[in-house]
Image (tube, rainbow, N blue to C red; front, side, top):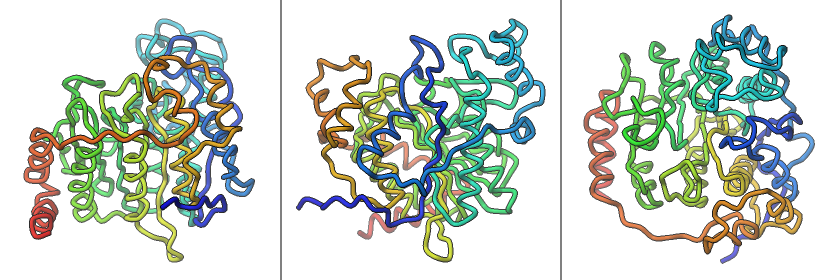
Length: 404
């Protein structure tokens, strides 16, 4: 049965953006030198799925706001480099900026500062009774005194800190293909924040350390699920379906922050998984349904972007995320205006693949069946049976699964 389209919102959600995301950043030959937020917004608008009231413009985070987490020296260095139009070697050596990983570009300070305030702003909108989506956010690797992994300022940390200022108990869920190491490190000493990251095993993927099942933090408030290469939909569904209820039961959050990086999707050039857009959206919908509620039933949920290095996959997927958050039923077929937008993107890395043409005409993927490998089952079993905070929840879930 075909679900009829519904382009009017049925949920209280806000989408946060800024015009500066249309400017070229990160430079040529960088994985993030592609259209991401602007393409997503254009595709959403091609669906007629964004009203003026739902869209909010982000300003730059002030140095004082950035210094909730980052050092004054680092914030000042970023500002000075933008003013100078270059990065001095002493800044490059101390703060890991101005190199290929974290390159200089026009808007060097202003662009990440704007993306960062988008997550603070999103947290404030959640406090006011909305769900919020900041696709420019999700820069989860940044350290207090340095850029890491393409991330200059750690907006998820700052968004969580804004929620913590109101005394809320925050669960951070990271489904990016890479370990959310910067966020985990930031809250190692705060027992009112739990971080949960499902990611490529760092034995073969960035950041090449940490993120193991045994890495629970001194307060046991870090949950890490390292996954092998080639994860398929059935495997990811199995892992998430067992882990997520146990985390919720163990921590009982008052608000959730979801980092929704799309590099777990099959064609992503930096990911090693084979996850479909459909499964990605299934996970997001589960999080929406399970999130704590405001008194009117609106989920207390902030969603931020993250990794994603295939612009066509990313825009299709994040358009679907916005559809779920705003309560719209978007047609599977991409409207002609949206198809034209996607075809105008300079992208040919997988043009010889049999699915390539579908990327312009459908926002969903061709599904490929797969089995759940024994290795995957054993990993989630090991986490649920060994993590100090999850043992009780894991046992309860296992009994439920067995009984069913």
